[in-house]
Image (cartoon, rainbow, N blue to C red; front, top):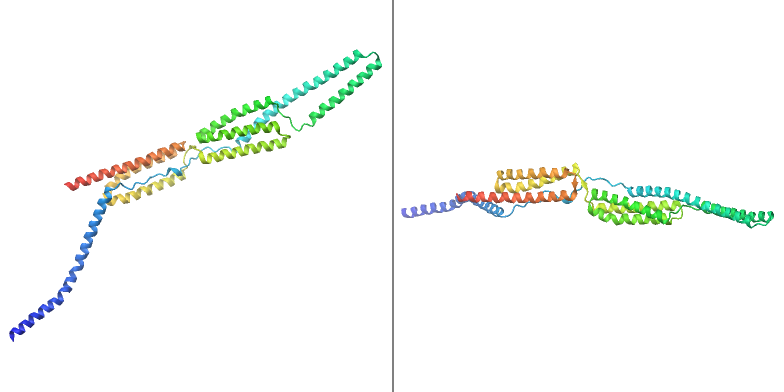
Length: 340
């Protein structure tokens, strides 16, 4: 009986112990699980960071040079119209001079003709009556031809230049458009000048044709204005697409570009710091500040836009190269520390 009671007591203890053990184990199981998960996550982070260090840093271009524009010399909107107007006035002055001389010469020749006719009539007349009759005929012819001469010049709507005057005007305009092309080349670059050349050549040819063929002054002026306007619009369109102007970048744009550069670099810093630490970030910042300073200086210099873009692309490449060189040194330093 005693033996049975003892066995029953042991059974109860074992039973109770068996009932209580899972609760005690559950108590200690959660901290252990949390620790295991923590260590696993840490191991994953270390492994991921090790893998990230093997990859090149994701260095983006600091400067987007495609959005750059220069504040350059504005082209005069009526430059060709002014050129044509000046040439037209000069041509008209020479035309009037030539016309006056020509008219004088023609009138003189007409008067000499009539005088010769009168003298011939006097020689041929055999009597006073016959002389009077012949002179009357000469005077009638003289009056008729003089009236026709005056009517011809009075009814002329405009003076038309001869070929010699037109050739001189074309030569003068060709020299002036060459000067204009030189200015376009300096202000807007070789490509703009190259494309503007045939536009100016055609405008000059059309102008000369108008001067030679226009029936009256109002129509001539309207045609000249149209020729100049069309040519100027074509050149402005050429510059809008192909210009490589000399100038500086406006300060508002420089401020915007500077902010974009800082944002891009800070993004890279936030990637680097967990991998290599704050000392690495300070080394990066020194390189970035140097690039930032050179960029600002380049944007403010008065030079051709293509030159600026070339310099800025070079700064982008140098920034990336130096960042990757820094990463190489950081990795070597970490590898040396692990061996110790």
